[in-house]
Each structure stands twice: as structure tokens, then as C-alpha cells.
Length: 262
Image 1: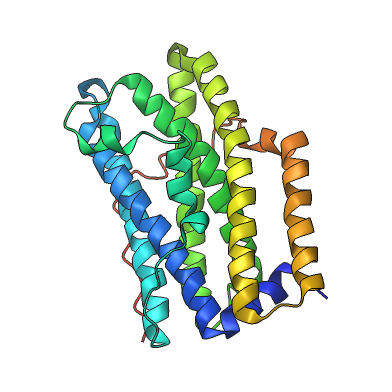
Image 2 (image 1 turned 90 degrees about the vertical axis):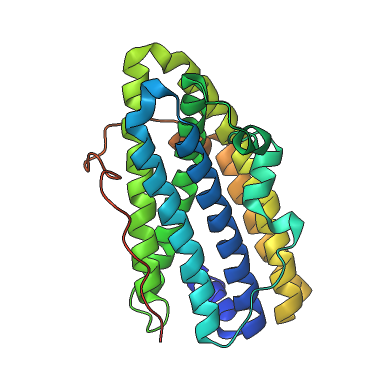
């Protein structure tokens, strides 16, 4: 019977599929680390109080990249090039989700509107990250190799999501509410489409590595399309709501260090 746990267990048990999974994850996290570091450096003077939190966000993403690389190293594996069609983070940037890299590579300070856009886009993508890590935590929190990594990354993603909610509500109170809601909606509808395409591409690569029979691959593809249909109909709304998180100032302290993997 196909399930999220059995599917990931199959990927985990094979060195080549596990290496591809970790390489994709490490690449995306490292890029997120760079983006947040540049945003922190370019925060407008009026919002300099946000810079330490954005820096913490980026440090967490860098840490996650190191964790995925360490998981590969523990099994004697080297990273592989990430197929472009599976590069979620780069595809988001290419479709205008997040601040343009050309802007981040410059030295011109960002505007308050740029920061609102960054936080709105992060609120959508961190929702996805939090849900994915919650699923892995549900099934693999006690796994001897993955458990510590899954628990740590999941907690970090929850903190990132809480931070986005809190800061966006602060900006909404300052009069940016309509812009935030419009940006959230546009980003959510684009993200669910990109997530569908990346999911199909990743499953295609995994299927070839693991030699999945056509019926199994077809069932998985149908499941991905079904999730997209639900998200396009109504599921996207969970990505655009805002509520004050239970944990306030979730990124108010220094980033925790990555665990060691013997």
C-alpha cells in the first residue's frame, strides 16, 4: 500500500535516491540562507530592527543545508547536481516569488514595500516547509539517523512561519493590509503550481532511480495532480490567513547550531 511513510522509506533506503533527495533539499536551503543574508544587509533604515531576525532566518536555512550534507556524508555519499526542473527555490525566483536576485546582488537599500513582499512570500513558502517537515516528524522523529535532524528542522520551520505571521500583522496594522493580502494570494496561487511541477519532476527522477513500475508512477502522479486540484480550489487559502502566533518573537534569539552526525 502506498503511503507517505512507505514512499519516503523507499527513498531513504536507496543511496542514489537518498542522495538526490538530500542534494535538492541542501541546495534549496543554502539558497534561502543567501537570500535572507542579503535581505538583512539591505533592510531600510526604518526597519533595521528586523535585520537580526532576518539574519537568524538565513542562518537557520544555512544550518539546514549543512544538516542535509552531513546526512549524506554519514553514508559516504557526495551531493549530486540538482536537476533544474526539481529546483523549487530557483523556480520560485524565476516566477517572481521572492525578491529578484539582481536586486539582492546590488547595494541599493530595499524599501519597506520590498520587506512586505519578502515577508508575504516567506509566509507562503514557510507554510509549505512547515507542513512537509511536520509530515516527516510524524513518521521519522524517532528514526536513528534522521530523527534529530527532522526534529530540529521542523522546529525551525515552525518558528519561521510564526515570525512571518507576527511581522505581517505588524505591517498590516501600519496600513499595508490590502497589499499584503493581494501579495499573499498571488504568491500562493503561483506556489501551488510550482510545487505541483516540482513534485512531478522529483517523482519522475525517483521513479527512474528506484525502477518503479508504470502503474505505481501513474498513481503517484495522479495523487500529485489531485493535491493540486484541491489546493487550486480551496487549499491555497490556508497560505494567506494571518493570526498572531502563540510563540511571539520566534526569531528573537541566535540560531542554534547543527547537530553532529557521527
